[in-house]
Image 1 (cartoon, rainbow, N blue to C red):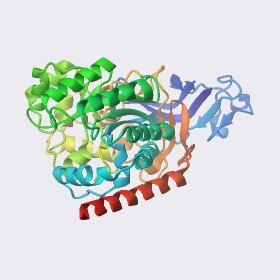
Image 2 (image 1 turned 45 degrees about the vertical axis):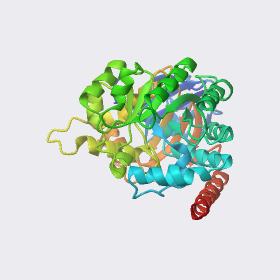
Image 3 (image 1 turned 30 degrees about the horizontal axis):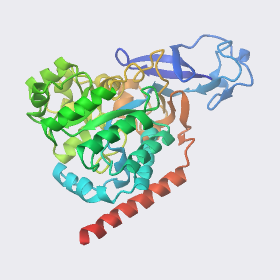
Image 4 (image 1 turned 60 degrees about the vertical axis):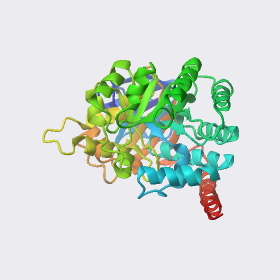
Length: 451
């Protein structure tokens, strides 16, 4: 299957964000083949029976460039860019939207993980993960790292993975062994996920280990987690803030290029040097970190330390679920209080795409429009209110665009959003499941708390 995106203003992100005006993107079997200026051919030479979703007369100029059956996507008046990469999100919390808007981190942990989590059944996790993945795709997030700490039973795990697969999003399923009982059972479950659920590293959904230690656990627990992950070829992600966690991992010999540090607020400079020296990466969730009181988002310090840094939504319990909001928060936080700010819109777009891909170890597959990479692509309607007129496409993406401007989304070359509407998913069913799940979870939690 071949797809050609024509007439769009392409914004690629590798090696740095740059603009290719009036360009074409050729995709074959889900992989990007080329990105180049449109050839100056005659429209009347086009085949008449080609497929196409926005392909009108303006899609001309491609005589002989395709065979019959090629799908033509006319991106005239649009901005074509790599899909966004969300490096840290608790997808299952989609049904708890806004429930902890005023909460500090401690209050969030008490309410969401302490009170609400036990009320989730396996079918609730399915509904929540499906709705959260749909929300991501609708906003142009084609890859999400799902830091999933809702593993109350193996059935909960299976439901989470099933929903991610059904949605069509590209996902890293970060298994966090919460609620699985003893350590042996947790290890058995991780091995089951790796061998039975997600055995391949080339699929749309791939596995990772979301670890608690040494911030929320002991160094000994961290040693066991890291040993398990490395035995199974899994990358590790952990929450880390303040002084201590990095040094403890360093002293235990656990640092490495397969470790993703989330948040990193208040981590000392010496710790950042250790992370950078090990090849470790970072994820910043600037909206949640600012609102919950984690501390100032560390985008500037992380990037100046040479650490590949991505962006994350984290949780919609108190934050929006789109990367446009996250990019703007990162941009503002990175420049606040600086007379001569160094952080640019190009830096922020890189964090939301190619650097984010590097942070989760997938920059060889996604994050830019380089030939050979997966065709995870977003087309923005540059004529949308609030976005037009566009003087600088990169600035427009970071400072002005929103979910309403997301016209088309492709994941692995497959169109999942077309003309501003998601396709291939039953939205009414997914929404109904999410609403019913939210009602069940909150009602059950209140009932349990009242006993």
